[in-house]
Length: 237
Ligand SMILES: *Cc1c(COP(=O)(O)O)cnc(C)c1O
Image 1 (cartoon, helix red, strand yellow):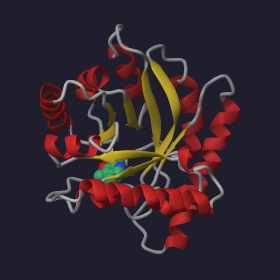
Image 2 (tube, protein in one colour):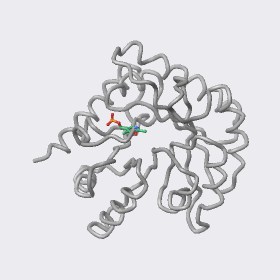
Image 3 (cartoon, protein in one colour):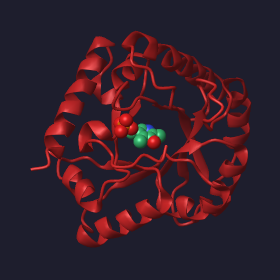
């Protein structure tokens, strides 16, 4: 017994409680299960509970895993989200194999993903990553630059801009965790106002350690790994 389904249920309860506390419907928060460093068997086990959306950070690992899952369980209709750092020479396989990309962190990457998205697939759903804590080591648009960039990126034909994503600096205090999430929510509202014709409906923020604070501040997708699968044996970021 690996406990994956129990952990998933516990995370769903946590999401429900946080949504309740924020007087939001629980269905307004979607769970993205982050399966990086865990194998195809872990994905299949999580999928058995009805989970469809999985997040991955490392391209080669994720392509191998997708192929293994697909050959073992062609009946599963999973949705794959790329959430890791993107090198510009790796955009083609990302544009080909993923349904969503949360980590678009510069215009050049958006342009390449649009150019390389295969014509027989629907437009690629994307979020722009915002460096909300202003960390030198983190990628993402500066908060003051993201709205203008979004206006240009929104016109790329093979992308569908859905919203914003952030990974704030780690912070243990639940109250202090809320500040960067609140700033992200303000940017998200600004984006919706600036791009009224688009379906800007996604604010991707909150992980195992801070999903409650993120939901309190309006997250619509929380990305959760270790609370479901346990501690990762290696962490490349
Ligand atoms: C690894 C990762 C997560 C999941 O983090 P946990 O703390 O394991 O829940 C979420 N988002 C991104 C971008 C990640 O790289």
